[in-house]
Image: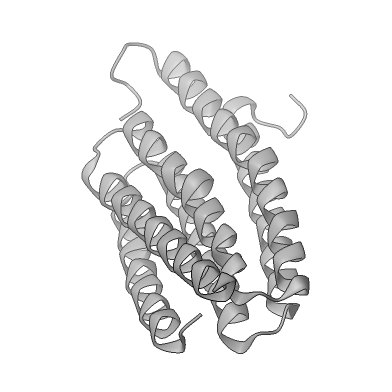
Length: 104
Length: 89
């Protein structure tokens, strides 16, 4: 009973994570400017990876779930920092080039 | 979890990796290449996690955590270098 429930939760989380990554990749391919691509990329590196790692509950393996929780904590800490660094670099480059639409 | 679902998910992520390579090739700015590289690293992390679920061993997640650390360091270093010309500037 509980095993079937965990299977379903893991499958749903896996599908959700893959869907988020697909949407994010579509956004990266479609957006013309750096800020728009950064907005789309935050969806894959944050919630997409977290959902895929959280789907480890479906395996019912204690070692795998522990490492997945560790990786989730690491992603939660690092993903906003790297996004902020890229956005700061883009703003700095646009300011250095001068004008609103200098950084494409 | 059913192995067929995991196999389909692995195929899906492999197709997404091809799309990420396309985004890397199509980038016009160096920061867009950094963004595409970061998203490729996230895809490989997901791929390693799914490989770990499929083989039912936890060792692949070690590699996933190490890859997350390396990609974070590389992204922050490249972004700070592009912003100010030095890693501590």
